[in-house]
Amino acid sequence: MEVYCAASYGAAIQAGEISDRGLVTLLAESGDAPVGYAQWRRSKSIDCVIAEQPSELGRIYVGAEWHGRGVAQQLMHNVLALAVAAGCDCVWLGVWEQNLKAAAFYRKFGFEVVGEHAFVVGCDQQRDLIMAKPLSTP
Image 1 (tube, rainbow, N blue to C red):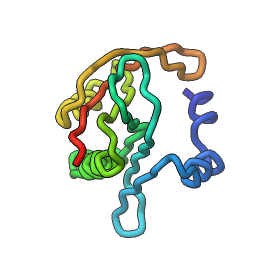
Image 2: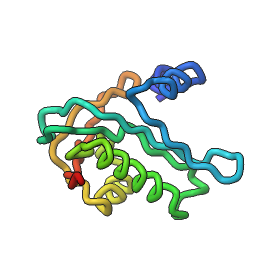
Image 3: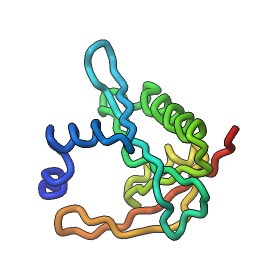
Image 4: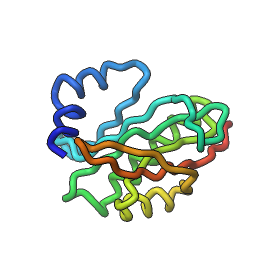
């Protein structure tokens, strides 16, 4: 986990993500304090996702003390609105197969498992479920 976190998180890495014009980072705050964030991008589809204009929810995280307080739901609503406004016909994501709480959250928003792929955390190869939600565009 330390190897994965060191390679995926840090001030320079997150600054690069925030400045990436193809990646939208949404920040949830309480007062001046960040309490969660989501990252969304238009993306190429992967084999198990059938879409002409796909997009990806790359991350959605909320601080543990904010779980159950509507923060994640608002972030998800905002991501879905971004995708619809961009003309996307699908949002997809990967979720670790053991993260049952997250998978249940995604199901509440209409995401369904459409496939899987390997996800390496450090030296440990794990299985992510690929979940997708079709969108109606205006």
